[in-house]
Image (cartoon, rainbow, N blue to C red):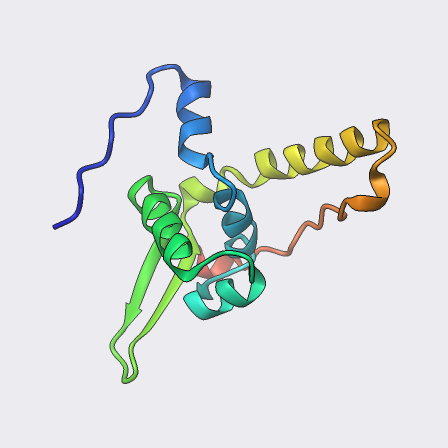
Length: 129
């Protein structure tokens, strides 16, 4: 049986940070912004994350309404994760954080160590409700 969702903070900024906090949630969202991804695709895109942690993070984001899980009735079973409309609302926020991170690295003369912020084209035909 699924564990009930923990009560979220009432202060909106604290609530938002609690929902997207963690090392991997923003990265997972970044990848699903461009369209549905299978678990194996996400794992390949993030080789440093364990499968257990990836599944846990996806479940938490699904619980908070940021991603949707679609199960296909095929053999072998296939599951895809996609950003919901609520999750897609975080896209400009994460892009702004990425750009701030670049400016911060430049200000500290560490720009050579940071990747560019890439805005991925969104597949509007696959947005989960």
